[in-house]
Picture 1 (cartoon, rainbow, N blue to C red):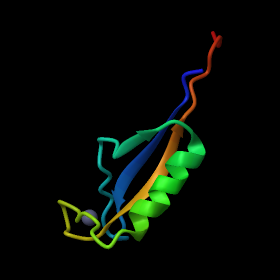
Picture 2 (picture 1 turned 90 degrees about the horizontal axis):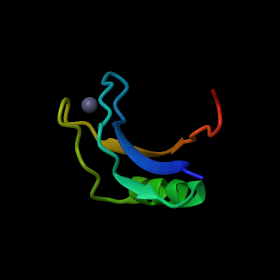
Picture 3 (picture 1 turned 120 degrees about the vertical axis):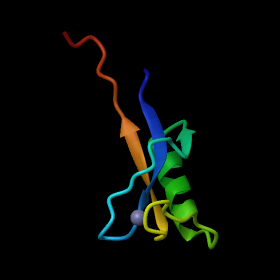
Length: 70
Ligand SMILES: [Zn+2]
């Protein structure tokens, strides 16, 4: 199984669509990625958006790789 679970960061400002291209972290399963995203979102020291200076938010993201599909 090669599914990947990641946490990514995006700008929480509604007027800005910045999403960080690099993954924040890779997790072993979806539950871990989800839990880490919540943990990061509750952190008081969140990073700032490089475009608008708004607060970044985190979300968990799963990449499901279909195997044997042709
Ligand atoms: Zn922004």
